[in-house]
Length: 274
Image 1 (cartoon, one colour):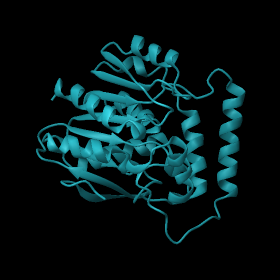
Image 2 (tube, helix red, strand yellow):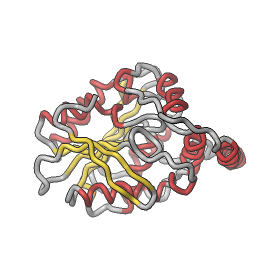
Image 3 (cartoon, helix red, strand yellow):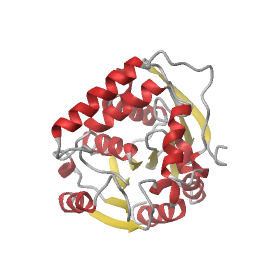
Image 4 (spheres, one colour):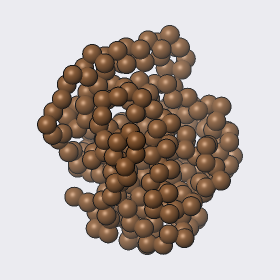
């Protein structure tokens, strides 16, 4: 269910239609843009969307391409980091928003970093939830490259798979990481799922994150198997105006497992900026 106060909208791009959910109260003020993780959709942020709207803030939540109500065309080039950056820009242009606060969970956090370093004049704040700045297997380059190639080939081999309709999974009600992850096999083409995983393996922002000078909040889970405390410490050192908060969690799925805690930390952060 779409949170009260939000309107479902779409933008038409040359690479397909992208869905998003907007609650714009004042076009002259910045908007908080929420980016979900892989195999998810905007409903990851439903609770956060309601709380931010109740405070009278501009909010936009995307269904990233391949997810939710957005385009699911089986063309690998449609799912690049660059294409996602252009999607965000197109939506902000359509909503006549000049300045933004970006919030990204996991893969959405990687996209938030990418957008921020390429649009640092318009980004006024950044929140990274369960997000790393580097490749998952950065210390084992061969394994990382092998994983990317394997996933790309597997995606092409499975590109024949089609469904008349895709199951729409409400991630606000998902309590575990694996429940959320496996839902991706039913909410999007398997080929697209693998191609996006390959893209995630290639994401590396070690050189770029030093360009982030605006206020940044880094939230991570105490038992995250994918984002290490060493990674978090490095980001805190390199990003000068950053704050780190650890939230008790069982796994990587911080945005779903600890929705209240994440929402509270976001609100406290934005109250200092808006």
